[in-house]
Length: 297
Image 1: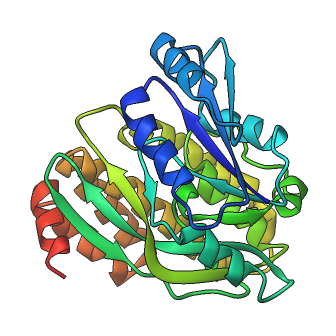
Image 2: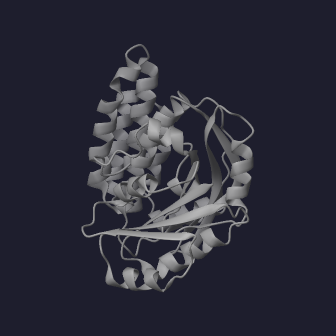
């Protein structure tokens, strides 16, 4: 059985569509676990109207963050596999069926992720991400978050438990931090097709808008994995460069072009890596324009 964990926080208008996306899966041996991260009257009233034994609903009084909610949902799950679905995302109907088939192909697989279609609600732009990398990602994961969104993942529950789930002390990048740990003990499978519709909406508050949390998390993650790099300084440099690019993109997203240019130049002179220069030149344009350009290719 697959346990679908949906964390939610005061977004009942989005939650309805997301639950329907989980119910519409062609793979039917599932349970849906909705976890309200803090009590919300509208969410509570809506969930009480649902009469479906496939759906379980949990709520606790005080907001503690999406990753606490995800861990909470997994603790109350009964499935052999876990799928996460954010309350503003949707799946293609055959996502879980295709992932379950892929996961069964190799006993060493601990996780299978998919491609996605990214939607930017405020600018009406979209583009497709079709990843291909799979297998042993124990090194590659330090240079790029290949796996991406939690909503794209199907993971064995035993693997999730072995790495102790999401680190709730991190204010951001908790998904990337989890993938790093998973990649050290299991092989990774991939389905390139965009089976996830991933929603971005800058008109409402998202964790991706809170740059300070990303900067703090990057420092914590560097410290957390420093022992991995004792004999591989090049890997460490690549890891630091990737985290710097994440921060720069957050400044670009929030149209703080001056800060994005400052960081890009500093990182370039420190590393002499040419791959940082596109970030510097991007900071002379608005983020909306960059999205328009990206959507063309």
